[in-house]
Length: 245
Image (tube, helix red, strand yellow):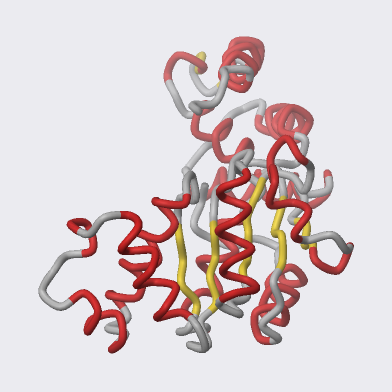
């Protein structure tokens, strides 16, 4: 994904407001919609926000939190670790250290890339939110069971959820042109290509960037003309590949 945040002013302000109010939230949206990009955009404004880039297991979460606390030179965490790197401490011991440091600390935690989390992951989120009194921003592809898993019920109300949606067709067309300019994509049939990209992507920013990059490849070019049919077929084939578990 391009690193420029495009046409997300309302979403950025809503995210800032929720973080400023220290509200736990389930942040959800399709893969490629830009959830992580928006978070990275506002993270520097909240020094007490701890970011876990991958939340695949309780062990991964507590190790990521420990590393984040150490990077912030948290005095309590550094004292608990002593001279030991966090990676050398057992998962059980590290969990005890992290939860003790977090209680009453004023931190917030982002758990990015939740993927069908289990009962054990839900227990971790519950412990952070309730036992440690830490606001949690849980990030999933949807608010439903297939993606949010057993964490979903911890955010039961509409106000507990925050959706990042794909672009509408008009915004998607503008985004195609911006990305094409960034990647120096030119073609005699650019207008037709742009319309096709908007249609195929469904307005998904990540998919738009991917197709623009594909359109620059020689295998999809005939002089200054982009071959739409091969690009369409290969994009669809890539899109239906199963995601790694």
